Length: 110
Length: 495
Image 1 (cartoon, rainbow over the protein chains, first blue to last red):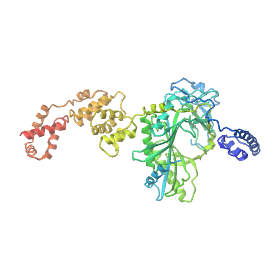
Image 2 (tube, rainbow over the protein chains, first blue to last red):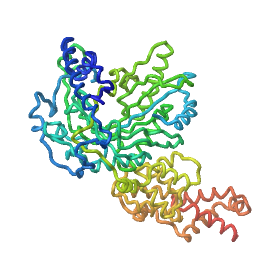
Image 3 (cartoon, each protein chain N blue to C red):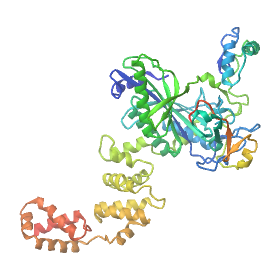
Image 4 (cartoon, rainbow over the protein chains, first blue to last red):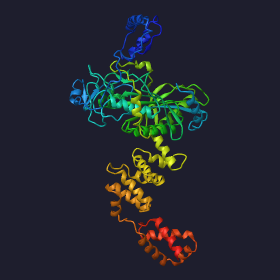
């Protein structure tokens, strides 16, 4: 099974502090080593719980991609008016020239 | 992933790529993103238009506000499947995934895309050169917002910089077309994108404007010694805004990698940015692995399960693809391969003139020539320029009612003033001379040049051109050359 894209093949192998640190980096969270240890152990118990589900016999069940059982739900390609610029920007902490203004993004060309 | 048949085919052609140092070959696959020509965005009813005032085509869904839900645009789905059909791909049941990443161009912090089960899989595109480029997949996803970087570029005033975001483009429907690593030279990459763009434009999927960003290309480039089987590390090149950039960037990057290997260095898997002004690629970031995007099924969208009827309905709307147009013209002209005239004549602007002219049984050679030369030089044609006018003028020329020179002048007048060819002909004073009028002019030329006439009459055929020239001059080019020759020959018989 997969948790957040990580393939967990053997539930007895717990998630390592290194994996926690990697996920934290992807989520732009900074963790201390102690926190990484703590979350590794907590996340491992979550995975243990998920492994309980794996132990169920589901070979009779059809594979489903979605719980609703509906397919092909679409809308027609017609324009619906949305928000004005002022409404769109009303929740923005900062704006300039009608645009959302955010701190510079590192590692990208200007 | 690549099937073995494709690979063997490649190896033969790859040997021909000679732009790299001896013994090295390029392995290139392209990812082409095309914005779809819909009225609205992929998952909401906001208008899909280019160039609107910032943040005016936005709503809670494409701004990722809490409580909003995406609903798929029916037209976008149809166009996406038509792209698959045009690329001979399998249109299949598929689902949407969330691609999670942190970058402010997506306000939701994820992009709705397709991951392991795309809408279209396993297609190919045949290039005019005859090379077959495999298509791994063509999947549906939403475009991101546009970021403008503001402020100083020097490190000292980093604090003053801001990134400004316009979400008008956020949620615009895209199809990403991923080729197999079948491209063996920069020129082949150009040919592939060019043919793909013509195909997308021909089926009405895209306007194909690279300069406006509605068609964007990323190139995956690696090199290896010829004869080596496994692929080496590849780099993904972004910011390829034109066919010229594409060719230059792939050439540069392949040489850079070969030079690195020859120097005993390694090539790092990374995303690189093409800088057109200095003509080099620069490292952007080390490539994230698929697992770093933490893909998971989009719970707010239900699966797609296209029916056979639906797919066949779309197939019937495809119309004639560029490869079919090309084949038709090559055959009509009795050729074995395409040429520049044909490539021009099958374009989206000109083919609507070619097709009905051929259907009306007009001479293919004149039709294609007038389209590819004269009509093409008048492009872009006004919407008011009627196809029937072009056909009428072709008929006038083919029936000898106007000369080739006259036909060209009339065509320019028709395009300029949007008037029927007969009206243009009168305005230009190019009304056809009658046989009587022509005979009179010819007789004058004969009496002024009795020696030449005698030589022509007694068999010196090369003097025909002399007399035709005289008549053309006397009539200011209004005479039909064929009619002049006919009358000249008849007079020579009589005397």
